[in-house]
Length: 298
Image (cartoon, rainbow, N blue to C red; front, side):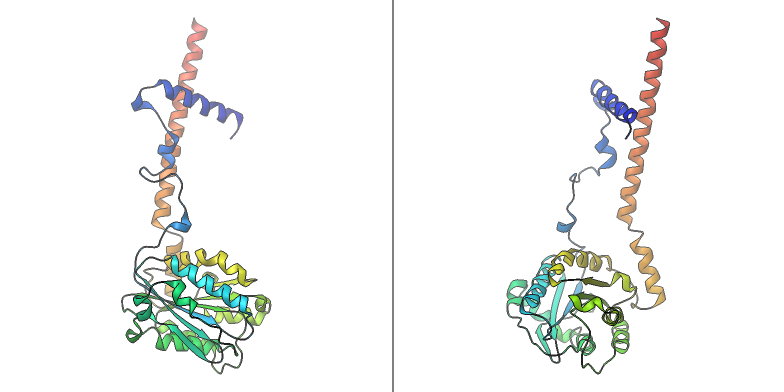
């Protein structure tokens, strides 16, 4: 704001103090939503309490160190604690073998992430990532495991590098997940993703558009910094019709993500407030001009 703008603002506030209560103009009236706190903390804002079933698929191969495995468990706990009550979680660990730590039924009985994750021990072995995706799709998103037909389904895959020894290809398991309407987020953690092949694998296992569903952090300690981002992406995916991977659903996602009604409403409030400010400044300018003419005549 230039010096003239600052001067006008000061004069506006001064004149407003001498006017009647009905004529006082407060900048906060234009820029803030009445009844809402002036500052909002997005981290503490919860998603709409819609039904969500989220499966975590975590890498338990021998290439992870004990500290990296612990950091991954901490990340899972942060994500689980950030969702409202109508979200269910399940956890499957994979290496060259698989271990189901808890399904949706068990989570429904015990919703304490700390207790559930305390029992998760590192498997070790190779990385059968594609086979693990198929196992999660076929065996965990089922009524027998507590999955709900009305819930939006998500698969969050956390891995430290390329799959090793796995006989399955990502293309076939990704298509199977698409048919089951399962949205997949792929998270690569560690230095294993400096290679182009490893990055291509992340994009092959994730939902489309992959730019919205693939995240890479250089170190496992960086997982803590992205748990809020993951939560927000999952929240934004609520109510998206049709399977991922089709051109129609991708187009719908793009439009909806850039046309948030709440964002548009806030923009309209700001624009209305700017119009009020302009009107007030025009009135002030007219008053000043009148005062100048009166002084010359006198």
